Image 1: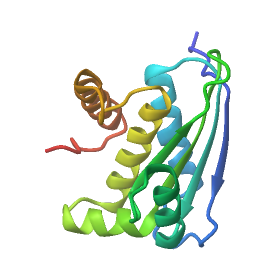
Image 2: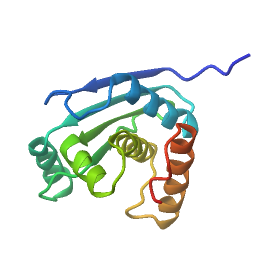
Image 3: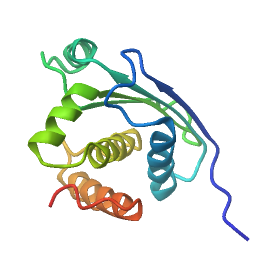
Image 4: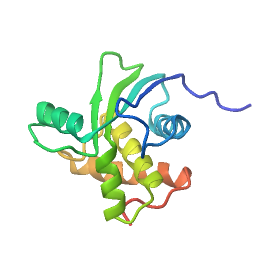
Length: 153
């Protein structure tokens, strides 16, 4: 009998349009893979693809950094039996990084969504070296299972 997947409530928002963004099907696949690889409880996730203005404003407000970053993660830990949070993806930054790093746009979006999902699951590479190693290994494992190359190669 196949293992039943945990319930996933996923809201995907494209306030600036869908140019240079992944499809809803792709996003759902990446989020689900990230959830089932680590957290097997139900999840409520919002993924919002923003422009550089909104990305910079959010990064400035929440992290005091006056530039748009590729991904911001906002976990909500009100219930340990539920994975809940928001991912903010700045599409223009992801596009620029993919070109600079000679990665496919698809692979880079997948990596950043997986990366953000691990942040929602309490991993923090910025303040915890052990978490950084674990995150990198989990990102590789999840992306490999999805058919993507090592994002750190």
